Structure formats: C-alpha cells, structure tokens
Amino acid sequence: MMGFMKRFRRPKSPKKNKALRVPNYDFQSPAYHGPDQTLRLDDKILRRIFEYVCPHAADETLESSEDSGHDGCMTCDMRDLAHCALAKRQFYSVAAGLLYKSIRIDAVHYCELEEVYAEQRRKTQTAHDVDPPTKRLQQLCRTVRDNQHVGSRVRFLKIPYMTRESCKADLARTVSVCPNLEYIDLPDGFYTGDPTCQLLRQELQARCPKIRKMKYDEGSEQVLETLLHGYWQELRIVEFNKIQIEPTLLRQAFGVLPWLSEASFSGMPWMNDSFFHSVPGVPDLPPLDTLNLKKMNGVTAEGLASYLTSPICRDTLQTLKIKDCSGLPVASLHAVLHYATNLQTLEYTATVSASLPIDPVPPMTSRSLRKLNYEIISNSTHQMYSPATSYYQYLTNSLMSSSLPALRQLYVRDPDFPESLTLAPPVRPFADAPPPRGFSQPLEVFSKGLDELEWIFTSITPADGFGRRGSMAGGRPLSSYSAHKGLGPQWGGDARRSVVVPNGFGGFLAIPAESERPQSAGNLTAGGDFGHGHSQSLTGLGGPPRHSWMPSHQKRSSRADLWR
Image (cartoon, rainbow, N blue to C red; front, top):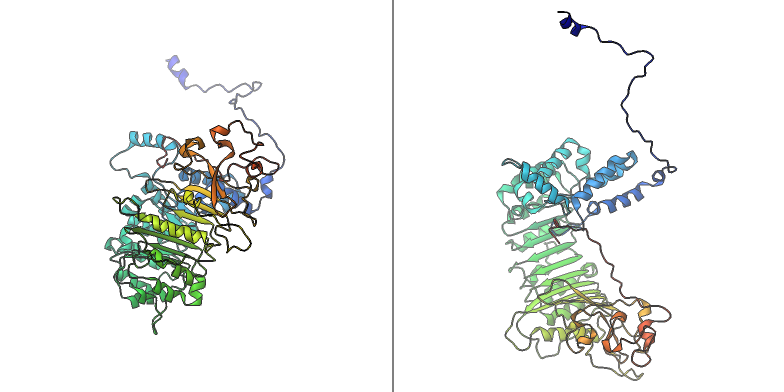
C-alpha cells in the first residue's frame, strides 16, 4: 500500500543552488560585413536585377507559350523570384510586380528536378490526381480571385496547349478578375466559334478590354461581327484564316480598330485587289506596320500598289511577308519595292516548278530595305537543273548591281549561295569605267538547305574606295559554311571557317581563318606572308586577328531537358 501511495507524492523541486539545464543550441551570430549596400539600390536597378533572376517575367511578346520560351527552367526561375520577394521588405514591391506581370505555366521542369518530381508523382499518384499544370492554373485562379490587386497586375498569361484545351472553365474564372490582361493563350475552339468556349469568350469580352492580339479562323464569322459592338478596340495584331465574310463588313471591322498595326491574311480566295481600293462610304484599310499574306492568290502587285499610293500607308509599312502567293511572283517584287519606299523587312517564300522567264526582269531596288528573307524552294526533283537556280541568279544580279544599298541581312534556302557570290564577273576599277558592280555595305548571309535545321552564317566585307579588301583587325566576323566545291579538303573539310572578302577587282574571294589555313601552309606563322605580301590583310596592323564576333550562349540542360 505504501508503495502504491508513493506514486502520488509531489515531485521534488530542484535545488536553488543548482542551475537549470537548458538545451544546448548552437547559436551563431551572423558575421558583420559592413553596412547593407542593397539599401542604396533604387527600384529601377532592383527590377533590372530581378529580370535576370527570372527572364520570362519581362516577356511582353504577343506569342504563344510554345513560341516564346527562354533558356533554362522557367518554373525554377519563378520560384527564385518568389524567394526574392520574401527575402526583404524592400524587395517585395518590385519582385511582386514582376512575379504577376507575365505569368507562364509549364508542364514540366526543364532541369534535373523534373526527374525527382516525376519519381515522387509515380509513387503517390492516384486516379483522382490532376496533372501539375492544371493544379498550378487552379492555384493561380484562387490567388487572383482572393486578391484583386494581384489580378490587376496580370498582363500576360501563357499556358501549355493541353492545359488550355481542358481547363476552359478555370480560364474563364481567371480572366474575369484580370482587367488589364493584354495576351492569353486560348484554346483552338475559341478561334473557330466553338460553343464550348462561349463562357470564356463572354468573360474575355466583358472583363478584358485591353486584349492586343486575336485570331479568327474558319467558322468564326459571327464572332468577327462582334468587333462592331466595340469589343477589344485596343487590338494591335489580327489574324484571319480561311474566313468567309463580306469584304465590306471586314473593312468596317478594320475601321473600329484605331490601334491596329499588324494584319495577317491566309487562305482567303475571295480576297483580291479590290479589297485594297478606296471606296466611298467604306473605311479604308488602315495603315499597317506589318502585312502578312499567305496563299492569297487573288492579290497582285497592282493591289498592293493601290494600297501604297496613300502617303500614310506607304510611310507606315515596314514589314511585308509573302508566302506561296501565286499572284505575287518573283518577277513582280521590283514593282512592290518601288512603291514601298519605307519597307525595312521583306520575307518572300515561294515553291516553284519552272525557271524564270528568259525576258529580262528589272532588279529589286530599295534604299530602305535592311533585311531580306528570300526562300525559293523547287518542287521538281527529276530535273537535271533545279528551277530555283534562275531565281537565285536574279537575286545575285540585284545584289551586284548595288540596287539594295541598305541591305544588311540576307536569308536564302540555298547552301551554295554564299559561294556563288565569289563567282561574280570582275570589273576593272578604272576611273572611266561605269559604276562598279558589287556591294557597298557589309552583308550577313544566312543560308541552309532543305534538310538542314540551323542557319549557317557568312559575312561579306566590302572593299574600300580603291577596290582593296579590308583587314581582320577591323573586327571582321568569320563564317562557318560548308565549302565542298572548288576548294578541296585541305581547307578543313565541310566544317571549315572562312570569310568572303572582295578580291580588289569587283568580285569576291573566300579565304580561310587564321587558325585554319591550308595544310600546305602549316609552316607559316601569323606574322608570316600568305601568298605574296598579304600578311597585312590577314593579321591586321599590330594585333592578333579576331576569330569570332558571335557570342556563345550557355544553356542549362540535364537528362530531363525535353528540348535539348
């Protein structure tokens, strides 16, 4: 009994002269390194720093999620930016503003973490679990609906294809509280008038008046008429694809879009030159910065000329894209360039089956054109000579006649085109000779064949006033294009690096880079002679040559990088 009662006794109090035991925590005071220098950074500098932490947060392009990716893992970058916002009160306002400005939801991590998370999902996944991008969209929806200030910051929202196709209701709830939204990735049914996107369309029209880009595909004719009701008057870019609508109604829709700067037309056979004519009582086609025509066989050079007769249209148009338009052959490009006096970029793509006519064609002439994308593809594979050869010969004649003095970049779908420039006929540099043929400006040539994925760069340096070629000391970039004809394997094979320079007589000559001279010249040093007295032209005056001007980009990658 006494033993049992001992359990109810009051525990003994610790002795007064005995120190209380405390847990042995190893507290270390932070090292002092002087005053906090971040207090001196203003919001502008902090914003710039955070843009390097999360590059896609500064993405303001009106492109889809598939076309506007960045190097690295966008999801990890957003996580790092969120940590920056919580690191210091000074950082919060700047980092939070970037965090919700341009939102990007990705299906996977583009780093080694995807392997870890995928393994965790395989172990804990059940039949009722949703995929990660859908869960992220639902979390974003809850965040912007709980905090209206966060919703007002959202301007760009980019979502994976499968997520926007399967989460239309979540998208509708999200955009309903984002009044300043300018661009959002929408499901394909939204552009074709699909009834399943009706709720999303109503929310976008009622709540988001600042949308900048919209597309109308076949089947969306009735939806296009809603523009006349005043929706989305701040549209900048509009695309039309295979729609069937009255030309007058389409011109009226253009009349209510005062900020329109780019229009694309594709697969509309009813559209002809009369669409560009000025008609009393019908709004004119507004002045555009960019005009894109694809498979528009009814449009000819006369129609574009009638549009460009207006001074404001002629001075505004800077980019013209023509692809597979039979009404605009290569022989009519000189007429288009004649009227487009302020054009800076021309992208022309055509598939040909016959050579150019034997009749002489005036050269392409423009004093403002700076970039030319000239892609001629031959659809005939059984002919001995490709029909595209005559088209590239026409381009060569236009270049050699100095008709494009402002041209700086040239894209061609012929891997041998840079070498063909070296075969230009020489012209005697005499005072009584006619104007010399050749280039008067540096030209960057990007070429590739039909089976190649990347553009191959070649730089062409003009001669000086005396017909002499420049020197490498002036920062001349080098090229790396395949030279498999006429130069032989002693120049480094298919992967050699070379530069194309004038030969002093109106033509051009390909020479090797300093580090890749012919094998027969291996005993020559950088300061020695190459040929007869041309060491100045290869090594410059008093300094080593510069071997490249193109920066090397470091990309993060791993075994889980799906885009590698």
